[in-house]
Image (cartoon, rainbow, N blue to C red):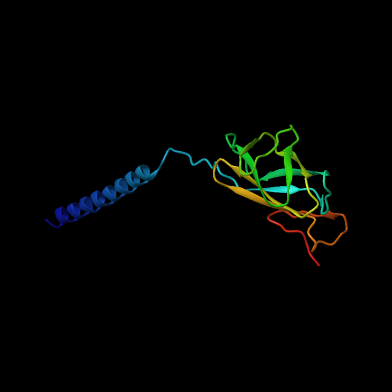
Length: 167
C-alpha cells in the first residue's frame, strides 16, 4: 500500500507540474500580439542660414531653411504658415506663393527658401511655424530692424526658437 501511495504522489506531482507548464505556455502565447507598432510621428527641427538683421523698405531678404527630421515616415506631410506681429511686409516661397497670415501651405521639399520683402522702414517681426500632420510643430521668430540688435549685418539663427542676440 505504501508503494501505491508513492506512485499516486508522483502522479499528482507530475500532473501539477504539467498543468503549470501548460498554463505558462498558454499565457505566453495569449499575451503575444501579431500587430507591429510602427512609429509614424518623429520630432523635427528647422535649420536656418544666417539672415541680415537690417532690412530697408523694398528690400527682399532670402531665408534658407532645411527640415532636420529625427526619423522618416512616408506619409508625413509638412505645412508652413506665418504671422507678422510688427511691421509690414510680404513673405513668399521660392515658387512664388505669397503667404497670407495664418494660412497653411504645403512644404514639398525638405530644403526650402522664403523671401521676405519689407514694405516699411520700421521693425519687422514675424513668426514662421512648420507643422506636420501628427501635430508636431517648430517655430522660428524673425526680427529685423530691432534697435537692440548689434549692427554687424547678419543674425545667426540657432536651431530652435530664437530671438536675435542683443547687447
